[in-house]
Image (cartoon, rainbow, N blue to C red; front, top):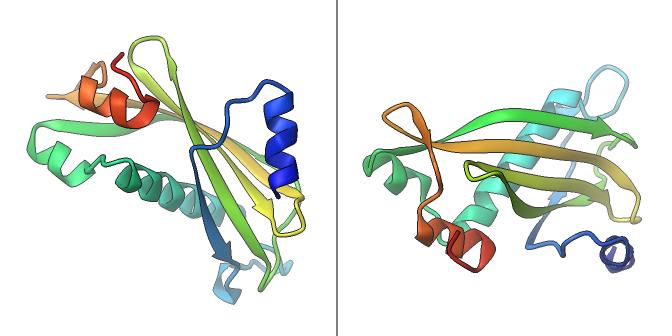
Length: 147
């Protein structure tokens, strides 16, 4: 799987900031014996939240401080079906789009190195229901520098 990350880096993609391992569970399958398309949203969301926790971003504390993260847009490409018991990892990195949107770029990669799915999730931080730029501490946690 490192080889794929190296190929991404060679194509100019930013390195992955985080990855989380999974194993497909039987109850995630549909009648065709493959992971149901909606389950990928759970995989990707859990990996994003785990990444944010690891980066020191606490959504519950943010909410108590009047800030909420909202998904603005999700795009998913399904490329190679996951099956029962298959091991894979979800990789995560972030980038900014303009001054308001935090974009999560993610991919689910099978243990064999085959890309199963990829997604682009655009989010915004809101305060009192209105979009606001990420606070400097959040930018530092996600991007390594204030924005």
